[in-house]
Length: 105
Image (tube, rainbow, N blue to C red; front, side, top):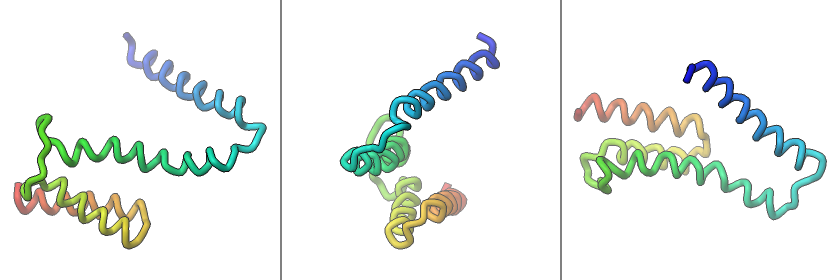
């Protein structure tokens, strides 16, 4: 299939998905309980993306000291806990991983 057609269809589906929520729910206010629940969606999605990358190697749990991604993630977690700044956390984690890989890989 042509890559441009795939990109166009993907963009159209994304737009329609977002538009459906705006049209269906855009006129009224969300209930308080739903707003509280929606606060947990970004951390849950981010965790689902990051944890497998950090904790698993070749399908096996890898919690050894030579897991550089785990070490970088721990440093990033301390930064996140201390400063509550997502950009600083991401940059710190990336820089830590880069330095660890330069030193030990």
